[in-house]
Every structure is written in structure tokens, then in C-alpha cells.
Amino acid sequence: MRSVAAWKRKQLKNPKFKAAYDALEFKFMLIGELIAARTRSKLTQAQIARRMGVSLSTVLRMEGGRTPSLTALRNYGRATGSRVEIKLLPMAANARSPLAGQACRRRLGAGVGRSGD
Image (tube, rainbow, N blue to C red):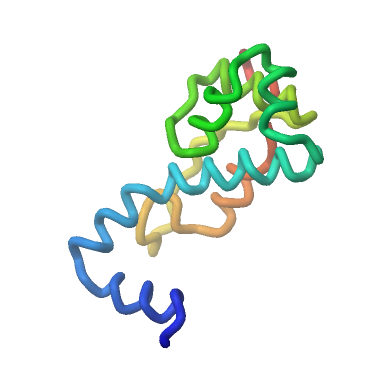
């Protein structure tokens, strides 16, 4: 049985697969940041929903891939004791996609709260 990483490397050689994968990169990055903030705060999804004043299904949808509004993102951040930081950074000359650089990933992952509300 081959690893998921080996399968992914092979699939990324297919231009159609790569385009679809790249199109979802931002969404998966955002989901990862939401879950990381919840994990750091040691809260359950239900606890975050209560702190946000929304239903559990709202939090489940946010963490499941539905792109939240900026207000919902800020509220999620506050519920987890984080702050939102949004930046548009120039792409590196050799970047494969707008989010390909590790520096960009680190900056987007800086946390979740107020950033020029």
C-alpha cells in the first residue's frame, strides 16, 4: 500500500487535478487555521458556538469548508482568544500559486480578532 503523500505527488502531476487542488488551497488553509485556534483554546465546537452566540451547525459549517463572513471569522477568533490578521502580500516570482510561499502561509496563520474593523 502506498502512502497518501506518494499518491498526492503522483496526482499533482495531472494538470486538471493540480488546478482543482490549487483552487481549494485557501479554503483548506482557512479550515486548518480555525481548527488550530480551537485546539489552542482547548474548547469544543459547542463551546465556541455558545461563545459566538450561534448554533453548533454554524461552527460545523465554518470548520467544514463554508467560507465565513469577516464578522463570523472575527467572532470565531474572539471566542477562541485569537485575533484575525488579513494581509495581501506580493507573490514571490517563482510562486506556483498565490498562496504557495511559506511566509504567506505563516502570515495568514497569525491568528484571529480585530484588523481594521
